[in-house]
Image (cartoon, rainbow, N blue to C red):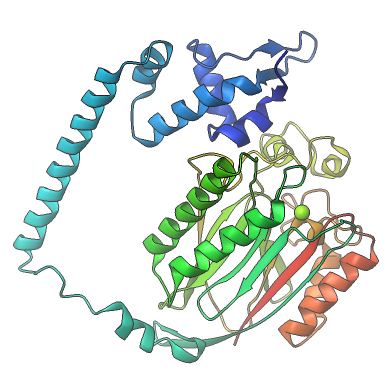
Length: 376
Ligand code: MG
């Protein structure tokens, strides 16, 4: 018998959401191999991942659900060719419309300032926008915690602040997290806009996914990346259960949503936040980077105010004894211990060191990583 995977695990590996898997199953596509009669839990065979990934790719190509349902049972070369021609026609039509809009505005292609000129203006970590000038200062720390190796990775640079947590239980998690951040750092380069950041995130997904395929290993990682923009704000892309918090005044707020089975249950009211820490599936991700050819990245736009302190962290930090708050989702003030530790040091490096030291001291069984960013 093929290895059986729970629906969340299967979802994370094939790139289709749990909701989509249920929709397809109802249409006779990628039907669960087994259903637990008493609990109703659905299980998929590992051998079904291939079909599910093809379905995910067709979705990414924009093929309607009803057409996929008809196609996947009996794939035909001719149908793929028809879809390819249709895509070419659609792109040509959109490109024509864009060119006509450009002509109507009397603008010519290539007149925007070159990237190099824009990056010159951004030296010294100055962010200007709406009359506001702010400077960012950052510190970072990471610790192996209770694991044999550190599969967390982090980046602190002028244009990119990020954490990634290589997936536990999968092989080469450290490779996945490092590869994702290296790809992102190279793509973001000397600064980027929202579209470029999103494209860089998708490129990181593709790089990790292909690396896993090349070495025949299942690798993946979380990713939470914070990129300052020129308008006194920051763009964040996020997937998995690492987190971004903002401390503004005395208020600690989690700005990212966890992509975990338990967070989904809390959001739908099926699980109380205080029961998360004892739930057997609290570490099961519903989304991650590099586990499938396609990934959905959350985007969060954050306005920066002088005095703000941001924390990017992995679950080994926020879930450690002292900070554990069940889930944090239902506590708008944030866990008090985390808030106090974030406010304890004036300098971001001392703050990051302190946060990680507290998590390690509390006996975190996981790698613990913190990146602290101050807006001045
Ligand atoms: Mg972790």
